[in-house]
Structure formats: structure tokens, C-alpha cells
Length: 130
Image (cartoon, rainbow, N blue to C red; front, side, top):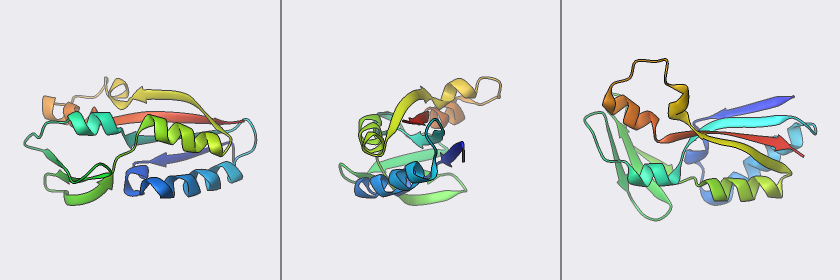
């Protein structure tokens, strides 16, 4: 593969499980390939204020409950930080080359204020296989 993507998945892994996934991704990529994805970022999740579409309840330092109106109720999810993901990926020969708010990609789409607040929870990332 020249690229592997992982969208909306890392927040379902405990911190100690992330290395195993990244190691498997790295093993499947040739040098010069990319690993990219989307993940809710810890700081953005902690700063979120509930609205009529979404609530987040912090359980402890590692996890939170995520609810999305008419879709998901009290989903157990784990915080993902840029520093932790970068450190674990580095151990696997993956170098962080992009970390950007997902909301910059939503500009062409019509989102109301509450939908935009939810989209702002997420960041896009890209790692380069060294």
C-alpha cells in the first residue's frame, strides 16, 4: 500500500492499544508511504460545551461518554492527544507531517452552529513512513 487511512477509530482504543495498531500500519506501509485519518482531539473534546445535538461527559482522565442525538447514546470513548499519537507513531517509524482541524475541510458545506461545534472536535492527521 502507498497509503492507509483510519477514520474515526482511534478514540475507541485505550491508550496502550494505539501502539499495536500503529505498528501494524507501519509494517504494512513501504518507506515513503502515508498513514492518514481523522480523530477527535483531546483538548477539543474537553473544551466542548453540550448543545441540543451532542453531549460529552468526562468519566476520568482517559475516557468520556459521547452522545449524538438520534444516533448514539453514551458511547464509551477514549481521549486521543496529538503528543501521544505522535510519540507512539514515532516508535513505529512514522513521522507526523500534518495535524489540522477538520473544520477547515467543512467550509464548502452548510453546517449550522451546533453541527460546526461537533465538527470542531475532530482533527485530520498524516504520518509519513520513514
